[in-house]
Image (cartoon, rainbow, N blue to C red; front, side):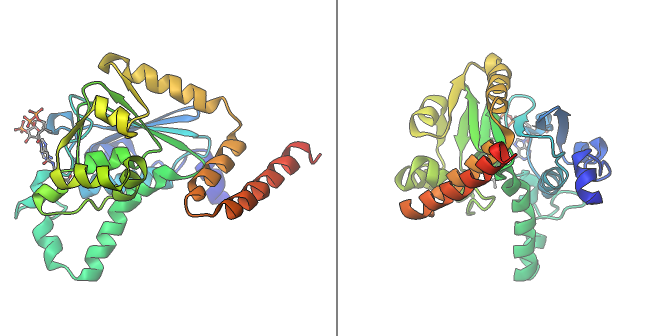
Length: 274
Ligand code: ACO
């Protein structure tokens, strides 16, 4: 109870202090029901490290309960150039090791570390929120996957998505493969990933990777407008509807109809139950 109240008040500042986030290459701001996460290492094209991912997870763990819309954006010329390439060097990122050290660790440690990194992405799909990636410039590798981890993508006309991992001998493992296939279909996902080619704005819009393409200067405004539209519906009905939509693919029509009825029963009782 005390924990839930603390979350509601947006406490636990020690976990997501501006200082810790800055060290991890992030900024985090809450304005009423809208939270904004900004990738903030523009001089390194917002390259991401393990610290970035655990800070993202900490933001998710401490998200104030009033928040309904989470915007993820990037500072500077790129949304994100993906994983910090120092991870591929023997020296790695100071204090965070490298893939050489990861390769020497046991399989259990390795899987644990990946799960920890993925936690920074997975919470963005929670039913209680709608996440919007505001993407401009390059969104490469982990940057592309971060955009894919959001519910919606509003992109600037200079956007360049690229799933670079297979070109580097890796697989995309930051939760991006499932949303990519669901958005664009298996054949197009194979094409995009196994060629590691750039997907530009026009194609992103055409194949369902982006909901909206706007001029670079209009990106912030377009995201603000979408957030306002999303906030215009009932909070609990929106969460219940998102739960239904998220479960739809895995259910039969009959099962989905039952799920709709169960969610509606709760809504009706809440609205008209006296
Ligand atoms: N990791 C660490 N540093 C990076 C990264 C990165 N992923 N990307 C860019 N930087 C640094 C550059 O080293 C450079 O630093 P410096 O000024 O100290 O020399 C600075 O950011 C600017 O980079 P430029 O290449 O000069 O910027 P430009 O705008 O010309 O190009 C681009 C941007 C296309 C994103 C290019 O930087 C690039 O290709 N980066 C690497 C992308 C990549 O392979 N990412 C890994 C994907 S796989 C994965 O994420 C799991």
